Image 1 (spheres, one colour):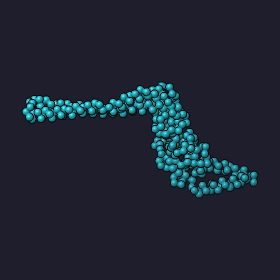
Image 2 (tube, rainbow, N blue to C red):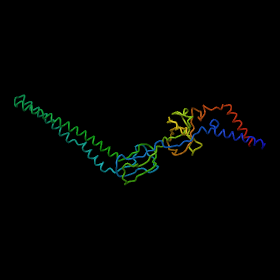
Image 3 (tube, rainbow, N blue to C red):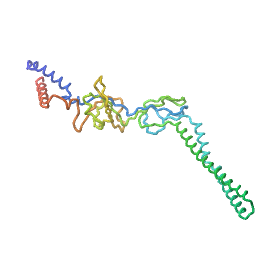
Length: 307
């Protein structure tokens, strides 16, 4: 029995090599190593210069889109807004010009009555007409000034809003770079990662280029959860193959609504076409199904003899 085992040892080594190196035999070759990353990684900056008055988040804080993150000192901007609001709301000039127009109309009507009764000359009647035109023009100018004042108020509010930096996306604060009292200009204030969805970057051999298409489903197995998998969808397939390595990149979108998965994990990715697991050489192998079945049978026999 020992002699027979020694004779079968080389065959065992060959079969083990075939099963571990040939993607047709090994199920694990249908899995490719990938990296789980945030969907977006954003450095939050300020559109204006100023002194930080308050930072409302800390590292690892969860934030929602539109949530205030950093507030700059805005005492001057608040004063400008109040002044613009008063100018936009006052109605004294508008009422004055309306009264002047009404007065000019009454005066013109009286002059016309006197002219019709031959009490005044035609020259005096003609002189009253421009007063109405001038009063109407002054009223129009007052209305235009009121509209401009409202626009100035909107501008002042916009400048005030720039003093509050809000989150452009929902995610997690990765880094906090500033504290209250610091002067900021063009430097980043915070770094935020969008964690739902996550993206998975995979490098595949060129022979799989025609097999992977956007919209294809894949299973992602994080390195910390070997027994569990998560469904993802292919979103990007690089159209250029790297000639040096003979590989191309693929990006998948992995839903993560409860932030259960962290980013930065290595993972295994198993691509699926329907219920079929896709591996390199599935459509190009020169080994027939009969040969594969025979090889698996021989492996089982060798294992039993070795035991």
